[in-house]
Image (cartoon, rainbow, N blue to C red; front, side):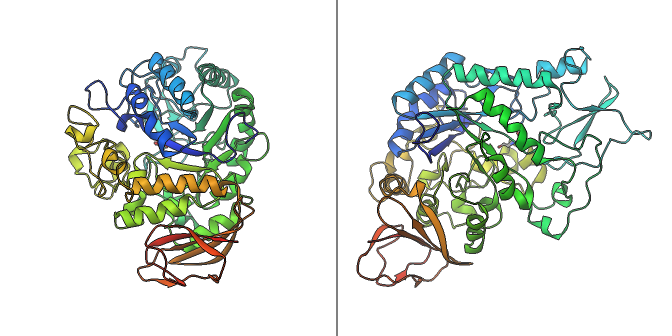
Length: 525
Ligand code: NOJ
């Protein structure tokens, strides 16, 4: 057990994107009653907790990460009573409940913003308002994450307002203590409704240079900053628009508001130094764990996995994950969309020590949907067409069964439904050989072997191979071997007497080789 009451030390957290999970009221969009209906699936799979992406009042201009009222449920998703029912059922099933806290910005439809725009004295400084330069230009050259200038002109105040994401997401002024009073109220509100933990959005963006100095151009190393091609955000070194060290210290406030028994995680985005920044954010009194985009966006090759392992410090603070509502689905990004590749990646993620995030649908081997321009809803995807970052393609509705719209909705859904190669959940749950069956088995075995709390030592890593020893776990040492290549290779440890295969994502290995595109867990007596 973890210091956080009732939480396992290294939880498996299942991310639900409510808009795409289950529609119950015939709108074509998922809702909280749908989450309630489908929680049994998550418990059956073996997860410890759910993380619900935003369901707060929102114009949904950034899929709900543009919050118009953080203490209410948007009518798209239901009511506060529906939320209470989700929490109660989750707890009955033994699942902890995490929700997002989007504290970097709000929607421009938030009442705070309207009052700030109108210079209501209480709200005047809730956002980052700055006068234009004498020539009318914005205060700095900063570019938002989604690729547009980070300043929006508001004629009503004759000032610029900072936004690090979409123009409709004005950034909160974290140097105003009254903003923090409001954020504390929000945190306490959800804790009182039974929430067990929080996922903090964009925690590396809260603070920036108070003098708004220009960012310099990116250096060569910055080419590794993730994102779609041709995003001018990647062309700057984010020296002044993000001050992660100030943000990390500020996290101690979150801990105070949320309480010692809450499990807290954060999205850490600091370009090529995100892993080191994560260590700052997860030191004592701060977050329990955080996640970085390295594995999802630097290319899943042996050297990158080893680099993350070596730089993360002791395991337990870095969350392992390969897909989310922000990245293209792993089985298509890294693989060819096949169940074989889905199993290979599942066995990799679930062997690594520390917390794990699973994104809804990855347990079915859901490939990335190739969507036509006309159906795209996400403004980030739309503005980078024809090279979209692929967020909507990872947000298509969950395929529950072979009924109308694959059981997601009785009406045409907000994004097209896609049937994964092994079929929808109802089909896969009846099969011993499906991707879903494999996930469930690997989750149970991870728990039996105690891999979540293991140590890790890299044995060898090159482009198509990663092998590591998982130490100090319950069942003696294990060895993880992942062959990302297209041909079988020798297993890089001696497979002598006393070595057993605990899990193989492919056929049982023949002697001393590991199959192409597969992962093995070996147990050594
Ligand atoms: C990270 C969220 O995961 C993403 O979906 C969102 O667009 C940005 N933060 C802005 O809130």
